[in-house]
Image (cartoon, rainbow, N blue to C red):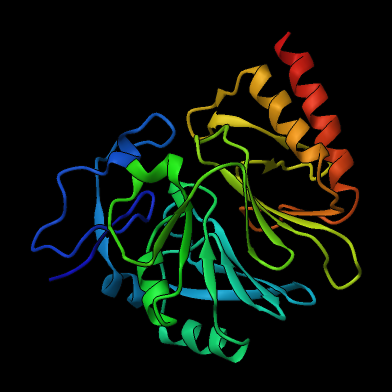
Length: 268
């Protein structure tokens, strides 16, 4: 039986003879169902029209992005460390070429995902690399549409998944919304992979925070202040967001601090 994927968000569902009647993730106010209605595809159909492209951002940090664009159009990251490699966030398309490239880069030891919009085919990625653990915050467990024994639900505000690689639960966009903090990159600087829990803006000297991005629904000032305070406790110089080109290549911590202040001012 085929594994159906929501064409709007890329979420995969358990194998079935027919697609689900609806995608709960897209029915939620933080996503949307297109005016044309709910649509579905399969992994096999996706492979006919799409491929993944790669980019190296700095030593030991790569991103992959599906072209032509599919669903939300986010990118995923492969982070290499001496203790193993991490896939941060996920894209729905996984083909033989992608598997070969990942293996050539040292394979994967774990997957960690910022929030439910990027769960996509995480189960297939885990299986392709030996049923590696998938770290998801337990606060978002209701949005897991396709169960897997590889899913590890973690609690609290932080979880170190490999030496120097820490997941930080910031909440905001989703209750379990998470960013990844890489304590020490090749030059000794800290790096944050933010998904869109912290959204790098079109002007990459700014970031923003929303409860719903497609429906443009803001977060309360108190939530943004709380997120800002949690990020102040970390040292980092660079930040990579969910979408192609959304990279803050220096002074990222100052950018977040200033953006929190401005966001709160505009809500007053």
